Length: 304
Image (cartoon, one colour):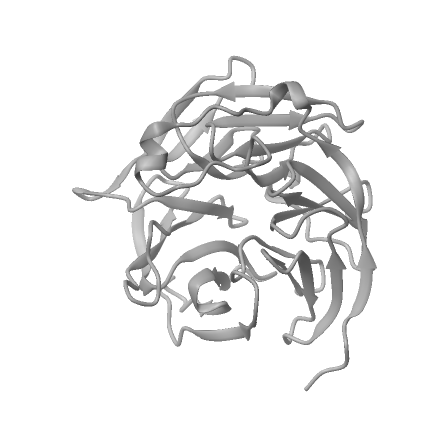
């Protein structure tokens, strides 16, 4: 259907030091059917602050890391939780999507993690996964839990800048990464168990109308994290394919960014002075990869 995407190779930016990798078994999570990662960590949620530090999370062991621009990794927080996604507000606040607890706030100075919202009305979340900011400060996040094609009850929420929480989509089979388009009037949503990226257009009143499939992938585990470039194209992390696909604004595959380490390419962030360096969490090896790409990423909300 399309020409073969151009191949782009990666290299290692940094990795979790051996001293920070864990071998202990968390009995509660094992009993819930969750396996312990062989790498001693499971990395996700990369996001840059204004100083060029890269924050990312360890979902399995409840840790939040920070890598300096030179690649030195340190633990910022360790707590009883399961952080999945992380995004930084333009005022410097660090928001975390935690599978156990909901949306949390990290104080990077003290390492303290406190709740922002843990339920919708009287109902606890299934297990929140990822989050993204709109230009007006509204926070969109996914509630994935264990939803799939048999149990398609995942949801997408919007926490407005004024603090009002509303559900904008439900009956989604495993909603995961998400990002808004350049105009902030369409939300792109990675739907992992459907192996697809959905398109959620907003009406003038902010409701979702005519939700549909934008990209249909094949193979791998299904899309995880996604990011937008400055042209409106999408970069999509495809775990178990060891790849990041870069699509045009119309959904044509232009580039395949190939992992030089493992195949669990879970999440992505554009960085560097020109925003043309793609940073990738390779969760199977506890490594952050990097690749130079032809198209710059969209300016992050944290940098606006």
